[in-house]
Length: 109
Image 1: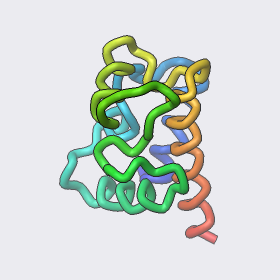
Image 2: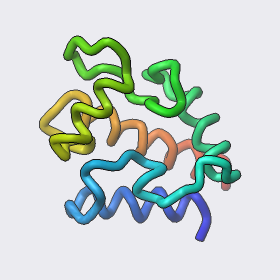
Image 3: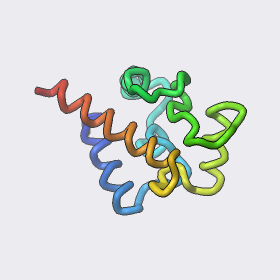
């Protein structure tokens, strides 16, 4: 399965609530941090206009004050709300997923 297909499948799981609430994109795709897919995702994260500046935690603060993006990730991870569309942070994560899908679809044209 291609990375694009994996991301689309994740998008469906997020919409249906069958994804892992406490894992990001890579964690939901079970990607090895040294894989080519992670290298590509990291490049896509950097291209996203709202990129946090750190590929391991690409989604920046959703309006809360945290010391850094890692602390925010851990906060939302611990309360199973990384993908909660009711939070600004969750909305940004869903937006990043859509950005990655859109970018890869354009590359296939």
